[in-house]
Length: 498
Image 1: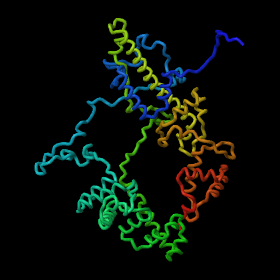
Image 2: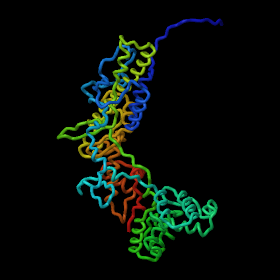
Image 3: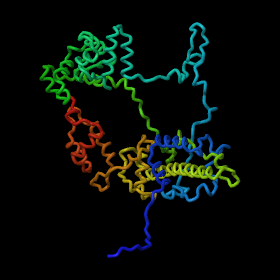
């Protein structure tokens, strides 16, 4: 068979992900903190972008001002690929920055000089009323870690240099809970000290605050705390030393038989034990809490709900007029310079429009959620309806994948609390009436049932399933157990009280 070259025409359609569309999709799924970080990175690498207090200052221009035709030639707005909503359906979105410097109350930041010459010092409370809030410099502090807190106590102790070295080694081998990770033999081997010095330093650190630090395990930790309370010979200490397994299963009858005490005495001892801290080192954790900043606020004004996008902290972007002038026809800039500026200007415009499109899409999704879940906004979690991504996607004319990206790591503040947008999408639990219930509503009812149960005879998972069945809700025992574990609720045998 002979080989030959042949030309043919073929017509086909395919979806091409342009770099601009990829950027728009990426911005859509970013969380608030990630978006701010991305904008800051773009400000560093793109000279055309500027951050200002006002889009209409002399040094910059608004996004909607006309640009040279060459700047955006061959581009399509990102909203066309992401199903941009109509103007009347969207909210105006601006990237706002911090207030002007002139609005800052500098007097609240600076301590005032103490007029009283008797103390001869610098006071932050001078010239202030007793009811006035403290200065920011007065309350500024660094949260101490467990290691620094113990080091501070060690430095106040009168010990030798060798003892200080051994103490530093012990403190450095404590985990985040305050438990000792090495044995006394390893302490002696690693530091080269005598057994007497190692034991002395271990005893010294175990006498420090917080009580229970330096213990080898949970039992030892609880005993150290009981000893600090002068309860080393009490019934509680005997339970911890010899019957911790019965305590874990809340077997009060077995504890009474094993210790020879009455049920009332065992109950009192267990109350003391449960008041101890099983992880004393966590009191001085240096981990900073992570606060959630809502992307959207939903307020109720009268009978209507108002949706407000949270733009606080997001930089307001603008295009520099200096680089816009380079693209003018009368500009004497070289061709290579104009090509470079045109490329950066195109990138800047795409970033700004993509961010605006992101905000508009979030607004439309929350608007749709408010329409479907109005009973939740009015009455709370018990009225949450089952929903899937397809419901919102069909309502606003977007793809399910777009809705999934929008609702990931985005939070909304409502009259019922702050929730992730994903929270409103729940599976359906069948009921006898035919109307399904959202799984989150079932969890809330499960939590309420357990809160009102008889503590002496807590309900088992099967009994809870029977309670739901009497209310017309078909729920398997395995489902009850799964929801109970998700709520962090113990099994019935561990919830029992004498």
